[in-house]
Image 1 (spheres, rainbow, N blue to C red):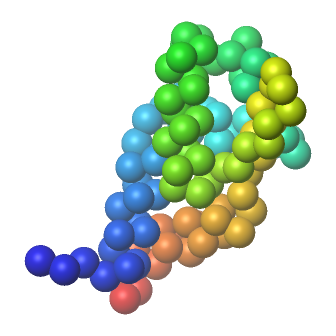
Image 2 (cartoon, rainbow, N blue to C red):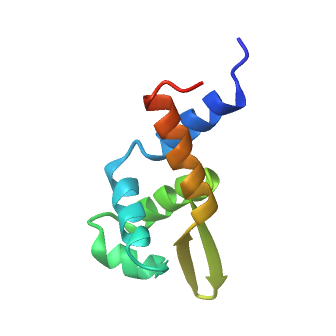
Length: 97
């Protein structure tokens, strides 16, 4: 079965939002301009390796972007993707095709 681009995008965003740690990460990043992964590790009650996996998932779907400044990585919300995700999810829940 073929799926539309919109269906694939909604599924990708839904998968990214499917874990409470990723929701918390997005809340942190949405409430400030950017944050270093080390600072998030101090806030969240998860191992750094687990945090890295969650950041990778959010980055792969485009909701966040990272800037590497060795030895730190700074993450920010990708505002364009954030707006797109909001629209796609709103359209989905309002049953707009």
